[in-house]
Image: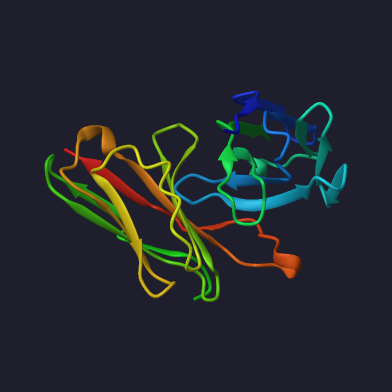
Length: 112
Length: 117
């Protein structure tokens, strides 16, 4: 089965700095890679996703990059704000309603 | 509805009792998933329903766990003879079909926090 590893487990940055979270996956058939943000007491919320036919996707301050050859993908948050503080999860799947395999999460703390 | 609804939001039960957790997916979403999140941990897949296909039960940790989805909509996760290690947040998610049969990202509910005492 798929194995998704996520690093770092915790990340502390100063407001305005950039944050990068990295994930690797093992199943070369995985073709869909979403990222979720989970705030305390809430369910995870999809913030950005990427499919294997593109290498990069950007949405305002958030971007995701994918390297299929190396089987790794990363989340980049620029100009971080205190409200970006949360736990972020990466995931991988074969798409088409297959189950997602989640990373273990990164707790991001943005210090004002 | 506007989002995935789960009930109850919190459940405290005595060890050995059975519990039922409910999930109302977004209307029109054909796929429904259950995950478990232990304190400070990642998301552990439990079971997945897609339309009328047989569910993927490969993540259920023991035969004390079961789930059903009636009429392609509401789902119930049942845990029999609960143990303390069952304490966790149980998350439900649903997703829809995009063009060309591709799935979309999940929409999660807020979860049911189960505490077994």
